[in-house]
Length: 167
Image 1: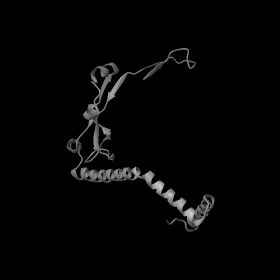
Image 2: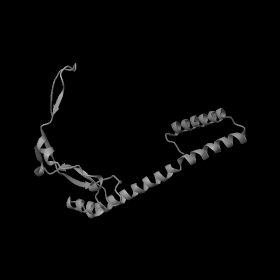
Image 3: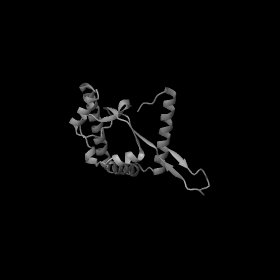
Image 4: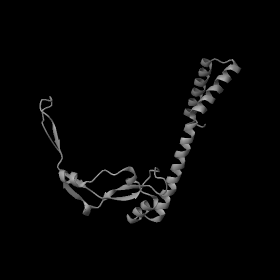
């Protein structure tokens, strides 16, 4: 990449140009993103195949690159991902372990989504509970806050004395 027009005051137009595009084919390995619908996720590895590096001038690349692929064209089903992983030297045991971890992560995401759906309801119930308790105990909001701060200070002191906190 080179730049022309070194004047910083903006009197000369700036221009950027690119020379050579280097395209590398990276090896593929198991990933950790549970966004795929099923099976083991895949990701690009750190290493690439030196013998397959392709160097093109920018204009040549622009002429040869072809149209942009749609999301559907980028989608890989489970069998295709497994085949790619095996072709890149990943063992069936590694694929199974990555699938197991992805399933756990996907379930965690589903659980979080479900709990978020009812978050406002839970907040409302907790708020009602606090207000109801204040009404029946004749406690003001300020007195409740003072008690919460006193409890927090007491807990912090216990944590510092014992070197750890217990719930």
